[in-house]
Structures are given as structure tokens and as C-alpha cells.
Length: 432
Ligand code: ADP
Ligand code: MG
Image (cartoon, rainbow, N blue to C red; front, side, top):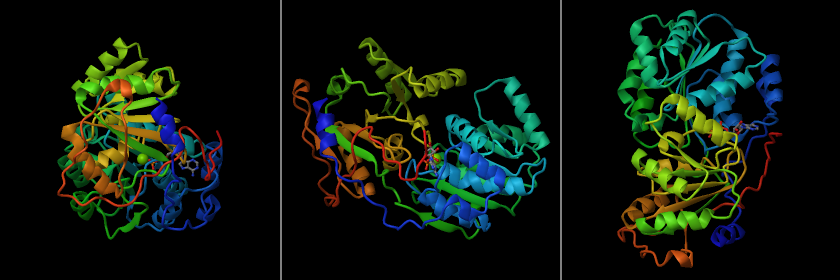
């Protein structure tokens, strides 16, 4: 564990974003009083850079494709202008459709909307799979009577659209959050199908922290002459201090044990690539008497919600997850993210480590690299443009493999970034 503390002490200052922040305040957007009241209730004092850039363009009714680092406030960047427009022209119709890759993200965005729109006359519902007949009936009613904002995962929404009762002809906004992830999950056909039900005249917004080239096709089909906003394209958030260990698979569990034992890190999120590995790790950590639980797609939705609730309220210290949780999920004070294996997609790395250091806080992200994953890790370093520090293994773990990623690549230049562990810096000020 001494290694983590040493790492923290060596932390450099985070990279400063290249673009100077235009000094806009929430007053500059001429938001309706009900929305301003919601912002005050949520303790939002100053818009983040992505909010300062995206909101004026959205208010001007332009399509956008927006890329900004994890934890920098993309949700409010699209929700606030939408709420403002609904306050200006209320009615019983589906005004906005937000499509997201996972159920957990749908629930989270719905909750954020509830907060911002607390004083606004607006109805909204999250629609996602894995729930039973009663929920389906409630969703049917909301879709028939025109809830203003629908936040949905693709599959469940299509089930409703196919039944023919969804009143969607007056739609003003289509928003795709984490669009690249939806393509990874094989939702391309589903998205096309959903879009075929929507009116052509609408405003479309696409948000993610990563926009790999494969997204271009979808963007071309769905967006109309979009403005592009790129704040630190494909870069981990500035407050994430990253490091890695080069290990054999057989050493991983002991390394984890050695890193965590006796330390009171409030919330730890461990990622592994497949649900079988996640389940196995859960068994091993429970055997070692860690306060740990796993979340993966074999749990039913109630179980998934319960595990996540326990993690959020800190009764569960360690959560082991598949990439279900790598996108969008915003949980306060996750101090440590561990990549138990290297994610297959370089973009997923950025999202996984972005579960810590949210909203200008800081956190540590450690990746375990086995010999087979060394090439993949090299690709991640190439994507983000700098090398991630490899730490020596604690002596009790024994010697690890040599680090020999493919020698065909040039060495990436640049440097790691990051700050201390759990410290807070709040320059855009959310009072707790
Ligand atoms: P992203 O989608 O960019 O990963 P989120 O929208 O989930 O990030 O926001 C991350 C966190 O920052 C959330 O807890 C959110 O409430 C908070 N946040 C966003 N914008 C502001 C702001 N202007 N002031 C204070 N807190 C903010
Ligand atoms: Mg997000």
C-alpha cells in the first residue's frame, strides 16, 4: 500500500485544458426563473466549460456533437436547455428523447432531471428493460399521454414503439448520451430503428467522453450540420492519477489484497472484462473477508439497483463491475478504480478511470497488466498520448513479468498527470 501513497506524493499537477474558459455564468443563458431556482437548489453556481460551450449552441437550435472528459458535467449541458425549452412551451407531448446504453445511466439521468426540474411543470420517465409488467404498463401510459422527457435504453423503447401507441410526432430533441458505447453494445440497428420513428425536423445532440471514428456513420445519419465541441478529446479527466502494475494473472489477487488491506479507502470500484471474471473475483474477495459485491448482467434489475444503492450510501465498500458501470455513472468520492484487467477497447479505459475524480475532485486509477494485455495497454497509452507509470510490485508479491509491449510502436511522448488521492478542488463550486 505504501506504493499508493508514494504515488500520490509524486503526483504532478493535472494538465490544464488547452482552451481558455470563456467566463459565462448561468445568468448569461437567460434561463427561466423555475430553472434558475432548480440550479440553486442543486447548488450549481457556475457552468463547467462544456456547459459554457454547449448550452448557447443548443439554445440557438443547432445540432451538436460534443466530446468532453468524464465527470465534467455533460448531463446538465444537455438537460438544462431542454428543461428551459419545455418551461417556455409546456404541453402533453414527448418533447425530448434521451437514449443511453445502460439501465443504471437511464435511472441516474432521470434523477438528475428530477433535481433540475423540481420547480418546473414537466413530466419525465426512465424506461429500461429488466422490469416487470406493472412497470411496462406505467411506461405505456407515460408514452401514450406524452411524458415530456423520456430517458430510455434502446431495446425497451423499441418494444413500446413497435406497439404503435407512442406519441412521438412532436419530438423536439433527440439526445444520444454515450453514443459510442451503444454502438459497442451492438445497438446500431436498434438506434436506426428508433430514429425511423422520429420526426425528421428535430434537434439532435450527441455526447460522450470519447468519439471513435466508428461513430461518424451514425452521426452523419442522425445529425444535421452539427457544431462540434471537443474539449480534451480522448483524455482521461485531469484529476485521475493513473498508474499500472505489470503482473502475472496468478499474482493479481495477492496484489489487490496487498493494496487494499488495512486501508480505509471509502469506495473502491474494480472493473473486470467479463461477468464470469467479475463473479469469480467477488467470490475471492468475499473469501478474504472484504466488504465486496459484484454487479453484472446476470443479476435481475432489483438486485442491480440494490448493489448500486449500497455502494452509493457507502454500506458497500468495494464494487466489482463489468463495463455496465464504466459509462456515465456518477458516484461521489470513488477514491480508487482498479482495472483488474486491461479493457479491450482503449476508449473504455478512459471511461473506467473516469468513474473517479468526478466534478474536479481527484482519485487514483490502477491497472493490472498481464503479459497478454501489454499490447492492449500500449494502445491505450497511444490513444491518450502519454505513458502511464508502471509501479514496482510490493516485495511480498514476488517478481512480475517483464514489460515488453510490441516494439513496433514508437514510444509515446508526454507524461502522466494527476493529483493526490481523495483531495478536493472545486473551482466550479458545488457546495455539499
Ligand atoms: P459527465 O457526463 O461529463 O461524465 P456528469 O454530468 O455526470 O459528468 O457530472 C459529474 C458531476 O459533476 C455530477 O455529480 C454533477 O452533479 C456535477 N456537476 C456538473 N455540472 C456542475 C456545475 N456546473 N456545478 C457543480 N457541479 C456540477
Ligand atoms: Mg455523462
